[in-house]
Length: 409
Ligand SMILES: NC(=O)C1=CN([C@@H]2O[C@H](COP(=O)(O)OP(=O)(O)OC[C@H]3O[C@@H](n4cnc5c(N)ncnc54)[C@H](O)[C@@H]3O)[C@@H](O)[C@H]2O)C=CC1
Ligand SMILES: O=C(O)C(=O)COP(=O)(O)O
Image 1: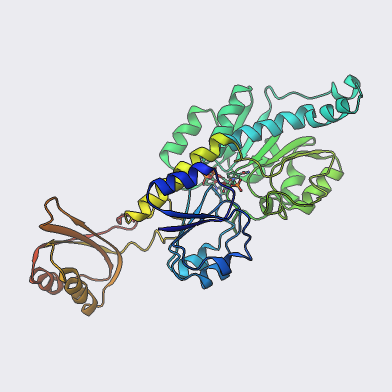
Image 2: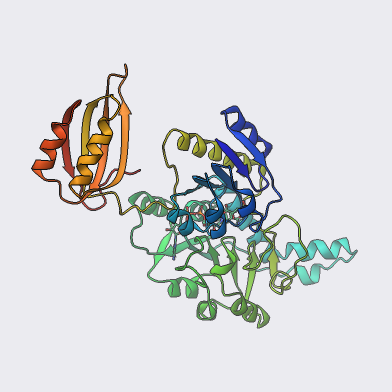
């Protein structure tokens, strides 16, 4: 597998991939605009925050997998990838502890004005009068928006500070997630509006997508308690930055921010931002995931995904359609001979059935195999009979899949 690494990744990533037999080219300086001209000849692209827009997929000849060495895939045009059958996978959860640590760091820094304390002391000014006025966090209420990998780890850490926890009730939350929330004493608000109005601190841990864009807008900020703290370590566009700036200027809220809508995509850049420079903001350089621990964990995750892909598995893929798993699962047990599957597929095609997902596993000894073919459409007795009579086929069975009961790819 030829792999292009277009971002700063630990040397261990390259080492692991090469140890697993892959050929790696590491070009951490590549930008989105360079990628279309560079992607030719590579099977796999690995990136962190480097953007992967549509032209990359249009220019690619062999590209079959993009791995986001991190959590958020909003920087990758996953639709363009899907249109060209390129898998996009992320490495979920592995950097969550690092982001949770930074989130708590920002909270303490805002509450105690630690950066301003430090700056004044470095300038030779002692000012206990100004800085000795923090509110304190014990008994305050933290509203967590986005109760996933990071949200839960923020909750665990905040609980240790004696902070009360709440989130928003959401359809489709798994039983495991509900149980964990209950265990941590997280109460559920009925709405985001209620969370905004009843939290002393709001921390954002949702992915960036159409549904979360400007989730924190003027109305949300207007509902927040006076002096409340907004923490954003998710993505810049989850917050309406103009509305936040206005709320900060009016002294209504304070903020700890690791991410910005127009943040530079590179490691170093000249960049100024009224938000990042605001006196009521403690800002960092999108470093939530940038600990050695997190990056090593991500590096292992990247290798696992590439290895799984090599073995035919789409692990942590974000752009396969979970609803298109077919209406019927057909199992064909057959002798492992050249041409059997071609004949089986030919019969499915003649019956007008579209294959949604397919695997073929060979048994020990190499004599026989079983193909699992998920199809969409009616499977007639006539078709089953013709499949069963295909040369070298040993047996055929069909299972009707309920909605959502398909075989996961
Ligand atoms: N600052 C940094 O360096 C990092 C930032 N991130 C950002 O944090 C985000 C979250 O990361 P994880 O916790 O690992 O992802 P996750 O997928 O484990 O959790 C996201 C949670 O948000 C929930 N959610 C989605 N839309 C929502 C909505 N409209 N309202 C309420 N909840 C909603 C999901 O159900 C899920 O529980 C990433 O998508 C990424 O953008 C992630 C890692 C590092
Ligand atoms: O994992 C994520 O979603 C992150 O935001 C981390 O970004 P990075 O890999 O540090 O550019």
